[in-house]
Image (cartoon, rainbow, N blue to C red; front, side, top):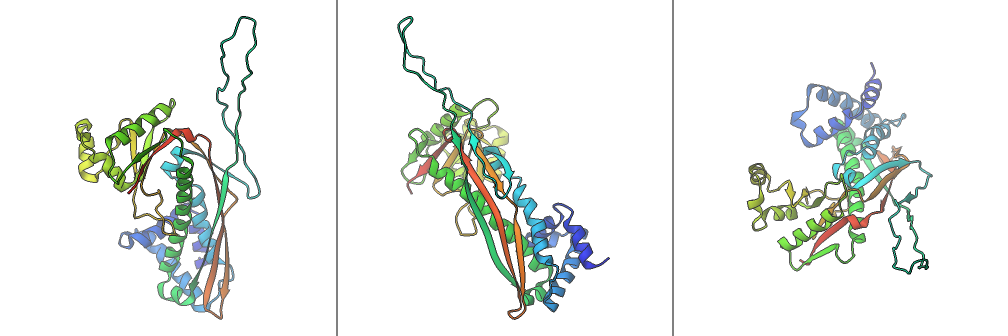
Length: 335
């Protein structure tokens, strides 16, 4: 069996090559026997391209596309999936969300047989705000010859991470900008979380939750830790929750809200936190939609004169539509 055939067969097994690339990048000493064999195959393939400068069948771009696209569009992100209904549409399609009508009819006191002012049901329509992200990069023939499979693993991991993180950052930035109404924002002077603020947030999201919703809060981990350390919190903890707090510095619930934390070590490709700093968000169930549009495309061109392969990863488009902003509250810090 040729190297090209082996690579093609591996790429057709969903998740195999991403798991391999992730393990090579983050835990190379824990490769399984199968993953070590994959490394040998990819290494020979990558070094051959670096030695000859030829990738006539565009194998690098096909590899990246096959690995990245399913993971970006089928990303099993529990937090986003809890907050949004997820979907996908064609590249040239548009989408409009018709929100379930709210009861805006008014029952006005009147005399028997009299007339009152008419009231109406408002079926509000929303259009998602779409954003398009792309990556342009290159990999030298020398890097392929020297690092072989590691070059391919790193490029694949970093490309996927950059696309996913920018989408997550965009979603939460838009959410932050849209929550400004009185009663939804609990302001704190300074940087220390107060019991009044977190209790107010818990009450707000609890009141706006409907049957089947599980209210939750999320923030950078430094604020999630503050929730656990609030004076008097430990008196409400079960033994199991105390054990988890001692191990992780986090708790599972506070006043009916599940606690979520995102590490400040995870940032977008532009250096921003995935969740805005100085914020603790509370959410009472599904708040809108998050749709992807079209498909990722990867373009490749070998530049023999400069001894490198140029790559363009494009077509990653996603749209956010917040149809129920009243289901979100937030705590803000002034310092």
